[in-house]
Image (tube, rainbow, N blue to C red; front, side, top):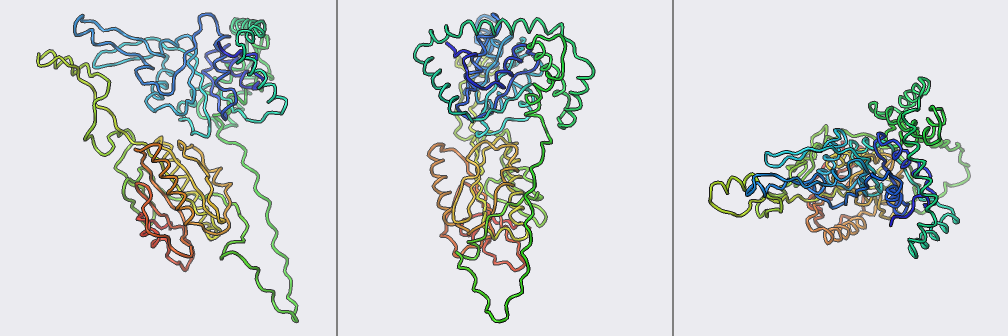
Amino acid sequence: MNYPFSAVAGQSLFKLALTLAAINPSIGGVLVSGPRGSAKSTLARALADLLPADGRFITLPLGASEEMLIGTLDLQQALSEAQVTFHPGLLAQAHGGVLYVDEVNLLPDALVDVLLDVAASKENIIERDGISHRHAADFLLIGTMNPDEGELRPQLQDRFGLCVELGNQYSLSERMDIVRRREAFDRDPTAFCLHYQAEQEALAAQINASRDRLATLSCSDEFRLLIAERCQQAAVEGLRADLVWYRAALAHAAWQQRTAVNATDIEAVEALVLAHRRQNPAPPAPPPPTPPPAFKRPAPDREAAPPANTQGDWGQMNPQPQRSVRVDLQPDRFTDSTARASSNNIRLAAGRQRGDHSGHGRRGSRPSMRVNWFKTLLVRSSGHRNELCYHPQKTGRAVLHLILLDTSASVLNEQAFAKAKGVIMNIAQAAYLLRERISILGFGNQQVQTLLAPVRAPKQVQQRLDNLPAGGGTPLLLALNQTQQLIQRLRRQQQQLQIQLYILTDGRIAALPEARCLGDSCMLIDTEQSTVKRGRGRELAQRLNAAYVALE
């Protein structure tokens, strides 16, 4: 029994998005992004009770296989009965209804590609060993995601017509009301749903009436022009935003029982349409300039005051923000065991390419549970054996790019900190394209802090990096110890995890650490930019068995 839609307290914008998508399915689905515990899944499932009687609500589990999604062709009957039977998958079951995907940003690439193809063609095609089958698959896609667990592929994100970005701020009375309602539902779901039954039926009737009203609505050229101007100002890609905005405005006008679209309808859906498509958000206000210190002539009868006692050379310098500067990196491939550098650019070379699931070769690969029917038919027709032939099992390895960033005050010299953040931005963008995870640790001001937990690489990290200040000392030894503990903990959770470590530092430390090896591969990027260099970066790389790259 689903929690009633009308019983959910708050989240009015998300409720509006789901209602508009139910009224006009041609909008293209709803994506909701928000932290855990913000009623994302509850509201999405509650929508099922408001759909028409023939509407279906199908859930795509996170661990679903490709066969579960698209369906299967039973070729085993071809061996005896000379016919092929199609077993429908979740796409066939969701035709005419809703396909709900929780944690859509964690879907494997293979399932994402299927969803993209079907969402564009409204048709699902299954091909197995020379035999194909197709069926209609037109459904409303609803996806939820937690932004802390990684970004969504842009191609799939654009397929969602509306997007809602939920916050996690509730007043004390709202929190008490939400807990009170949930407790009442858990205690007696039947009585709780009966309490909201009249409100639910009225809401479902209003949605059905709004669907019927869509065909009679009109929109003047004045408001079509307004939509086009707003999309142009937002610098959206393509024309999908214009179409979705128009369809959402029609649905909102129908919901408000109007006969034509007006300015209120345009404004009401703007945030939903542009939340995930806007390309030119307003730039953050620059920090106020710091006035230069006033010049004072020293008194001739006094000696200069001794400098204040500081902790190290840079201990008392206040943290200062600095925007990242793009560095000419060409990370078309990442490193497996070595890094190559030239005077003009840095190349992270690798033998592993996207789509190669072979790992370190196919030795020891085991057969999977997928039957190779074409090969089975050929073998059986020759009369040699009767057992089934299987496809080989894929043995890909997960990859984590672990970055240690020196945020001490010494890296502020000659914009070394800004360049280092530019390097990280390039690595993160390349990891994002490869659908690999990334984690960033900052060490400075005598502490180590997690700047980005191990997640699938977000598409945009520049804002996080630009807001990161530099200052204080260089606790490299503490950072290396915590990194070693983190790697051990990650390996216990996932033994096959491949960790590629990047250390960005100017090497200005009092003493070199003991020799050690961290991760499967390690690269030290020397950010020292001073005219007279101490050259500690190269010695540090040798101690850590890391490839050395100078940030020229």
